[in-house]
Image 1 (cartoon, rainbow, N blue to C red):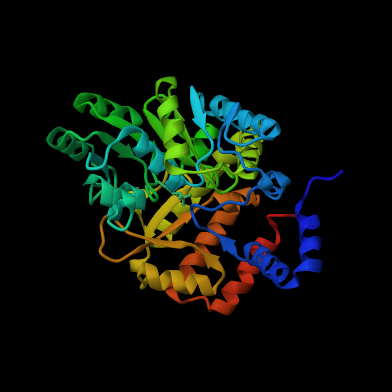
Image 2: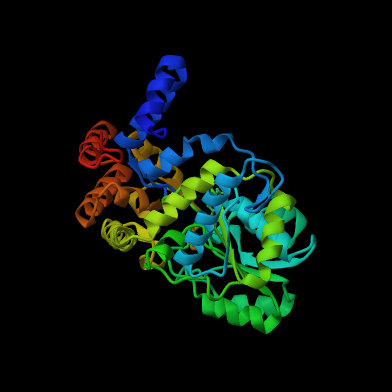
Length: 413
Ligand SMILES: *Cc1c(COP(=O)(O)O)cnc(C)c1O
């Protein structure tokens, strides 16, 4: 008997709902014929997709293994225990909660576990790469908590440690959040722990981006330092779209209750099974190689973009992530992103610490999964610069992108 897998699913859909099947195939074509440079994206494996498309999607499972509010959970309980054990072992954490539906849900639960509405929280300001859940007025976080933002040095682009310490002493926050959607360097978790201890604050690491590098030993782990680590499972970690929380044994019960029943209902067992698959993959030597290649690729991408004249934030990267100002090439971030999109190069804009105009944010997680290495990064950076300068016509660039990605299919037939 075969568990559901992508081609089988596609067959069923093609017969029953050709209209929707057409959309899925169109997206598969888009993903494999353009360059995926969005820093938060990746290509999860066929095994992860198989778990996501499995009948575990049918199961209601409120609660936790051995303590569910529904009957018939004896098999999905095994899946969740496996996911938890694999996460704990992969990250050396005393406790893992794998039920968060997304990175944002994980952060919400972390706040719910440790804070009360109105509490003061110190976090990287949104203009410097803080996430919406780090105090945006458009998000629950900005509405329910009193966020004090810290920033980065305008010259170096590095987190301003002196400012963090001074703000912590002045505002005595209940929690300090470290983590970002755009910071290309390692975060000094020991420093944040020291400041948190000095002012009696909890330390929450929102490691949504680098957690995959941590799994592969290519970035320092926040687990020994933070009271609670929030993460996504779908970025560099290459699992299904979802979140997770890691913490010490003493906070385990509070974190679990903050996820269910405080902020979520039934667990998504197909996603949890897919997380287990991804944690299993991330524990292999192949994934360690992958994580290091992701960083090597990002370093070459950053260096080549700098050679081409872009201003690379912090002068380079330690991670999968590069942010850069294309202004010297004659375009702001928004204009550049439009030109690049027409050429089939998909990436994001981001705020820049040193400029009012927006910059570009790119990542190497997806292209590295496809098998691209340093040589391809140089080709991508040169092509990107040519397109932004307006030297390469978008039709010609689109051809070159097609030629490049044609050699690296994300899902080989
Ligand atoms: C991606 C990200 C999130 C949110 O994850 P979602 O799954 O999109 O909700 C939260 N915090 C940080 C730092 C992120 O990078």
